[in-house]
Length: 296
Image 1: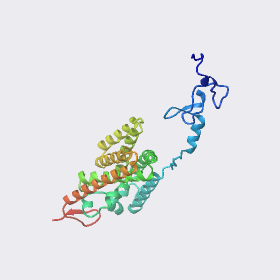
Image 2: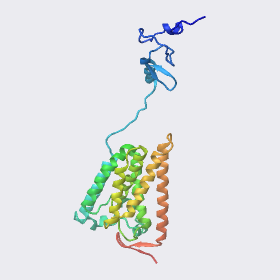
Image 3: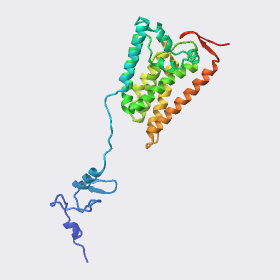
Image 4: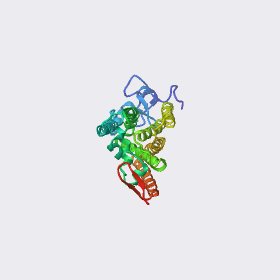
């Protein structure tokens, strides 16, 4: 028996369900109705008609993602830094010499003072600034770098990252710095944000040249400008990069939890290192906020 030219009778009479004037030999893999190429869409397996694609989209629940284009933590941190600066100015009675007041002396970071019982200095020193220019430069950097990192990581993870970076900078000074030298400023935490920004750009496969140049220039300034704590900057940079890597490179399903585990582990290591360094000082006696000496 011969087959008529033009194919089987079924293929000749089959027409698109949406366009009856268009013969077709194609069918939807989902509903098995005939459809012309214009009415078909690629599916994970085979082709589906536009009606089935629309029905599938309506039946698939949409995940609700709460996002904000406005940073909250960064402006809050800036406000805290400015408020602390104002308090040191009032206490010292001078804008240019705000570091001469008793409040600044009681909250700045010096390893021997931490060993003498001033553990709060590891944190409070990250909100102090020596003079107005120091404050302005750091707050500008915090705004332009921090806002992008906060919007990518979210408020909670950004806050954890910032706190860990601040502690990383303080720990580096505590471990390797001059035992009696005082250090202050938000630069350690800000360098942590720089390290995090590089990690995020790499994760998102975005150009990193500009960020690397900014970090490089800041490291050069740390090496060449007197009075800048290179140790605090590098400590914050390393800790920020490590914590950010844990937050964005963890297993997909447990990534938020994995990030917090990494951050917690880093902080635990820093605390242990600080405790060991503290023990190496032996007995330290502080007669005041600024005068500490080793015990006999």
